[in-house]
Image (cartoon, rainbow, N blue to C red):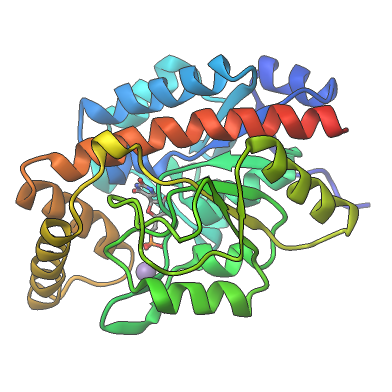
Length: 306
Ligand code: PSU
Ligand code: MN
């Protein structure tokens, strides 16, 4: 017999899952690698509050001393946020067994969080932007895209981070069989900006409609994920031109500094925030909290569909 996966569930999360109530998974890489202090803790807590206001239970996921934990306490979020970046393993699919076996602290990426959410029975997950295909490095394809192709969790996000090559990212999602849904939009959001100009597969105008598509995928025994994309709130969006300038400069610097692998995304996010005087960070935080709210609504609608 295969033993059940070793997960530590917060009592509130375990109770909600047992009763079939709405739960939303939240990731932890944005706490350790995506946002600097003190915004990382504030944003993680604001996302949890937004999920609750929608009527769902938040479950922030991380590896704590080798234990895969679903539903961090406030103290655990604060501890993770205060650790030096080098002390926390950025956990995508390949990293989870390493962090578990070695008793490490690990922050889960979109891919890592999807894996754990699925093991726990959580079907909806909110984040900022997924990883994708990097600009000028077409073989640097985020494991997030392949995970979406093989793990049945709905990821509510503002598209892929605009530091990426968005047309190529959409091509890989198509190859992986991942439906891209636009919530109130015909085009893929561009993370800091509201639109990339690239079409989504389908537009829905309510969270209930999005939940119907997720429920249909469940009935079809789909083994892949879905992307529900939500544009950054208009008042916090970055103008496309200034965003593009900052991204181009940061991308050139990353190449000059020979930055590779899992260090690329954290470097670009930090550099773009510096180059835009914090405007990109404000947009990032606003979209994270907004996406958590919409994910909560979707999870509630999905729970009502049974
Ligand atoms: N969304 C954000 N900030 C982030 C991330 C997403 O607003 O820092 C993280 C996610 O955890 C995502 C990761 O999985 O960036 C992508 O990293 P890579 O390109 O190395 O796969
Ligand atoms: Mn990468």
